[in-house]
Amino acid sequence: TKTEYKQANIPMLPNTRGDKITKIQILVYSISVVLFSTILYFLDYNSILYLIFSLVLGVKFIYECVKLLRFDDYDERKVFNFSIIYLFLIYLIISVDKILISFTWIKSKHQILLKDFIRKEKAKILLSFS
Image 1 (tube, rainbow, N blue to C red):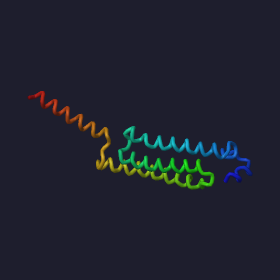
Image 2 (cartoon, helix red, strand yellow):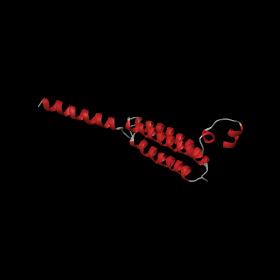
Image 3 (cartoon, one colour):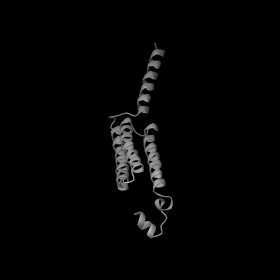
Image 4 (spheres, rainbow, N blue to C red):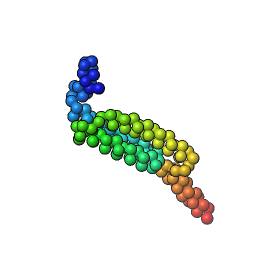
């Protein structure tokens, strides 16, 4: 805890900069984690299913951090515990999403565009022989 770190003379952010700055840093880092988590969809690494779940989890994570920042009596352990759950679920969703894509239950946007492109090229070739 904060007092134990202070007694041990270990410079942790709450002891060196204060609680308010620490809570702001937690919020900023949480927002960046959520943004980088959702980027996987836009890089076409995961499907829309992943994006939906990651956004729902991300909003909940940021909400918990905002509550920590706004309310002095809010238990920090709730944010800490949810951050562990958040990361676990994000990794789980990445894995499940990849399995679903490999079974072609859901398609990535590039797979759909590629099939559409191939279909159009086949049509052009067939028309050129007519």
